[in-house]
Length: 506
Ligand SMILES: Cc1ncc(COP(=O)(O)O)c(C=O)c1O
Image (cartoon, rainbow, N blue to C red; front, side):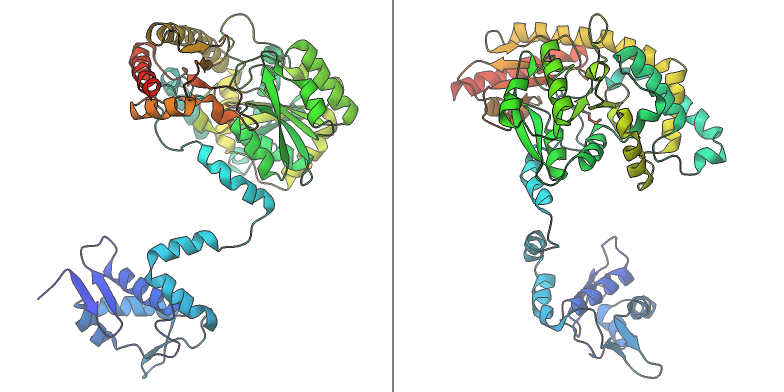
């Protein structure tokens, strides 16, 4: 009788004919796993293909296919006219066999073992481990009010698709052939023109290096700037991606408090005067939304100029000033060449594009170019070329203008809805730029508790206390409104109000 599971009693193997994995592959894997586990010892005679086929109730050709593959990979030895045996020389060390056998037979133990063993890591990698808890959940569809999500519903997808198709269709062999590791030249030019005009950044195209977004820019800059253990000023509360990049580069993040005037430069000088790098978002601090005051900008530049420190300016969303022209970048005030400006297309286009850029000070252009020469191109040349066309043809500037209006409307709608649905519990900070707002939470509510309760009700907000590296000085919620259409917004704030009610009863 044909069963769904065939058993080779002589080898303790089972096959499952209902599995989507072909039978010959199951047999291959089964024998291989038992050899690696030491259960089938070197030199052991393997039953004939005919016997195995009978035991497993499969065609002999299935068995032969598996045995041939095992022989080709060196697990089995087949001599003409003789039986097939487990190869006498296997890469597995004899003393590891019993442990390996246990691992092969016990999946739970195998999982645990993988976590506790494995190659030894650098201290910088071990420091990253505890941070995975706060890492973004990749792949999950964004819900109201996940911070950092742009208005993807308003992105001109058809226009972008046409631009990409046109560039692909007309691609020269030069474009198809790898590309410049520093970035596609026309894109570097278009970016230099754009940031000079719209952000007051002083640069020529040679200073612009294309990146796969902000995170890659941080990684690259920090790797060039830091020796192991060097201190880096990071905003507190601040962008978790910045701290992760510092730790990954072997640096020591030093939390510097942020207030209504942005990073407290005086505190930075007191806590870590010899830091090698300051990582700041001067135009729109994340997550509090403050702008670094002019006095502090000057103090920061003076400190960096005097100590030869580097300032990384994270300018992730300041294009979206709701009214008036965007604020001028810190880089535009830098006379000593200590600022590396970092921009991204994650907000102004869409995060999945994974394109951004850094603008190196003139004295560092050579070292960035040399670092790039040792790496591969940062992103697909065709996508870079399409983006260059998008900028040059004015589509990007038009899209930014539309987004500014949309974010103003969405931000105002959120503040009104919070006022109506959660009166007296949430105190929003001023919101004149970008696509998120931070609101303080009336004591004694715990922002972590409210966040979790809101999540249970289908609303995604971030807890302000999760953004602190040092002492948690404030409890609040961070709302992203960029991706939330005004007509769907009230459902979110009402659900949040219910979550606040539940939390306040605890
Ligand atoms: C403060 C800050 N900087 C930069 C970014 C953009 O990162 P990336 O360009 O790697 O997508 C974000 C995204 O949310 C951010 O919040």
